[in-house]
Image (cartoon, rainbow, N blue to C red; front, side, top):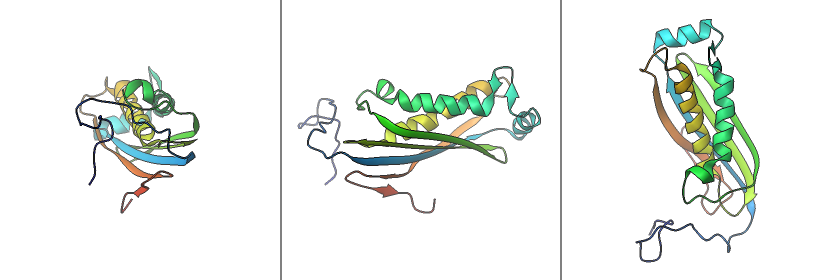
Amino acid sequence: MKTLTHVDERGEEPRMVDVSHKNITERIAHAQGRVVFPEDVAQTLSDAGFMTKKGAVLTVAQIAGVMGVKATSQLIPLCHPLMLNGCKVEITMQGNEAVIDCRVSCQGKTGVEMEALTGVSVAALTLYDMCKALSHDIVIRDIRLIGKAGGKRDFQRAGV
C-alpha cells in the first residue's frame, strides 16, 4: 500500500524524509510544461525576435529556470538540498506555445524530480512576467514529470 512519505509514522506531523539508509545513485529527471500565448502575442514576440523592453524573453526564462532548479530546497519546504551534476532548460516555440523542457541530474540518495518541476515552473512564470504587458490571457499549463530514473521507482510517462 502506498503511503505519504513527508509525514511522521502516525500520519500527523510533517517531516523531511530520512534518506540516510539509501544508496547513492545517479538520479535523473525530466519535466515539461507549456506557456500558451494568444496568437497575436506569439506573432508580436516572433516579429521582435523574442526581445522586449525587459530583455531576451526566452534566454531570461531559461536562466530563471536554472535558478529555480538550484533554489528548489529553499522553495519547497521538505525537499533536501542537493548537489546537482547538471541542469538543462530548453525552451522551444511550437506555434503559439512555448514548450519548456528541464532535465536535471545528480548523484545522491534522493531524486531530482522536484528540481526539474521547479525549473519548468519558474521558467514558465518568467515567460508570463516578461510578456504580461502584451496580454493577461497567457496560460501556463501541463507542468508534469516526463520521467525519472535512479531511485526506488523509475518512471516514464507513456506516449511522451
